[in-house]
Length: 114
Image 1 (cartoon, rainbow, N blue to C red):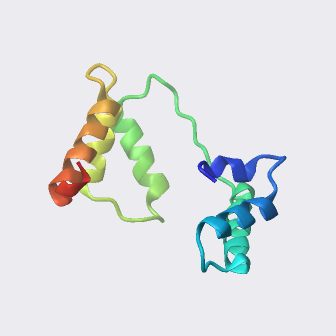
Image 2: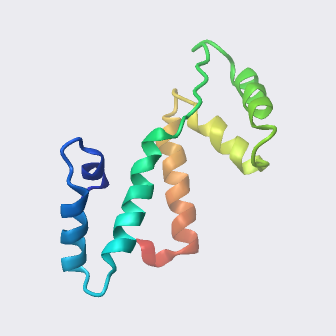
């Protein structure tokens, strides 16, 4: 299976996917692969909350909303806030810039990634 999306296709045969995988990877347990794929397929039952904000909100308001919503979650660093401010800047291509910064930081830690 080249693309995990195949697993979620209505016509997907998990049995065939497991069989093919085990033939390409000698020594793997069909039961273990099947159990893993079934756990993965259950992801479609997870609920994801979405909060839509008005397009005309300023970044300070959006940041305040984000802080309040995330107050019970993972504590965020100053870098997280800086990256979110960079990402929302449409005038200077913020999302692309954020990706470039992420890539640069990854290369700084793992140069072999290049």
